[in-house]
Image 1 (cartoon, rainbow, N blue to C red):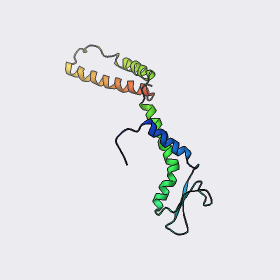
Image 2: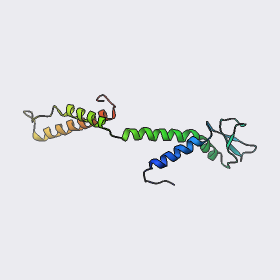
Image 3: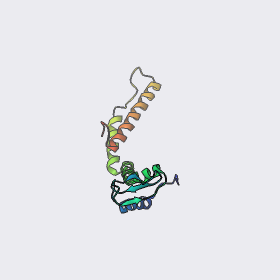
Length: 144
């Protein structure tokens, strides 16, 4: 069942605990004596400890077999992305410096430039400044 509700840290930790409690991988699917028997073994050998046996569909068995590698990889990716979404004081300071540097050139309307053109120009400068500030905060790009 899927939901649009954010996962709590407790739910995330419970998934991690279930992964950590499983038999070491990699797991692989192998066919039993007939086509309808699919087993999932913990290290790819037919004589290895069986994780799941007599799974009627080979795609289901393959899904279960890959879960031992896929779920930890997904958990690591969630943690990596979550870390990038966390704003700390250092990120704010880097963004502030980058924004200040990028907007330092904004002054008065140059001779011969209409007010509308100046407003457009300032808007583009601020857009660049915001991008530079965000890149600096995230530690990416040339402004990091």
